[in-house]
Each structure stands twice: as C-alpha cells, then as structure tokens.
Image (tube, rainbow, N blue to C red; front, top):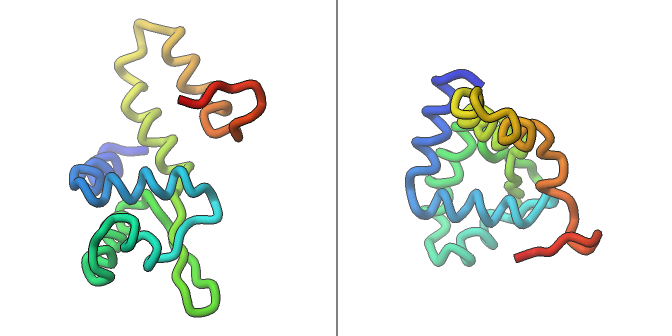
Length: 119
C-alpha cells in the first residue's frame, strides 16, 4: 500500500459512522450486509448510509455486489490487511517479533470455535 492509499483509507475511517460500518462488515464476513441492514444497524437513513458507503468504497476498504434487488457490501480484507501492514512496516523495524506476528496474521480471521478464545 502506498502513502496516498493509506491517507484515503484513514480519511474514510476518521468518521464515526464509517468506522462502525467497516467494523460491522468485518464481523459479517464475506457474505456482507445489504445497505438497508447497514442503515438499520447504524441508526441512520438510507441516504446517509449511502453517502458513507460511497466514501468507504472509494477508499477501497469495502466492495459491493448486486444480489437481485439488493446491493450487498463486504469488507475488503486484503485492503484492510495492507493498511495494517503499512502501519506496522516502519515501527517494527527494531522489533522483529511484532513484525513477524503482523505478517503471519493468517489466524486473525479464523472462525471461532477451533480452540480460540473470543473476547
């Protein structure tokens, strides 16, 4: 991820509703959520959520697909992982253990119930 993309991502996440949307979509998994469901969960109007979804999609943090009459939004896990790696790249130069954990990140999204404790 380059600095320009990171800035777009951070700008999109710097608003309370958008951050909540991304967090909800991460929890929802690859199946995603319909725009109407997102609006309901966020307690905002369809117009308001549409504005926020467009900003998040423009930043690359989420993607959309059409299923019959609904538009389904999903977290872009690859972009989110790239953003975390971008943050950790320089700060971890002197701490190989931290960097190793970030790069190994394959178990961060593993389904619960495989012996993992979920807080």
